Length: 167
Image: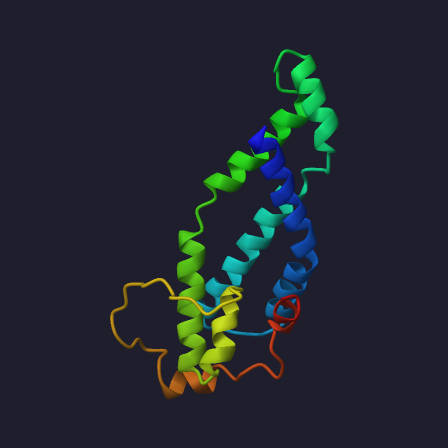
């Protein structure tokens, strides 16, 4: 029963956040870049959006009738409960390690390119500044420094504005 309720709460949250997430991904797509680190950060946002869309497909079901039917059927899970359980397990298995690393690298790159750290920190969508995951680096690469700044002009507007406004 916990999975049923939890899955519906998670799906409800993804439906609420979906429009802001879609606006954010669309805005990020509008920022041209040839930098592979920033492209990976953008791809991470696309991965998040795809998962939210999958979870949001769980349609709203009132829990009381489902619980009543569950008890009346000698505690045999209904189709609605089985569907919710699949969505719950999908959400719980979702490993965001690579997404977190890609976003952390993109934040570091934005700061290196001159974006203020406070603005760049919002790229990962976290409400509060957090300790970013460590990632292995091999020092400065060919794209670091002045050449990278010249190749990456900052966007005229912040593509994360819609996500920040949704806070």
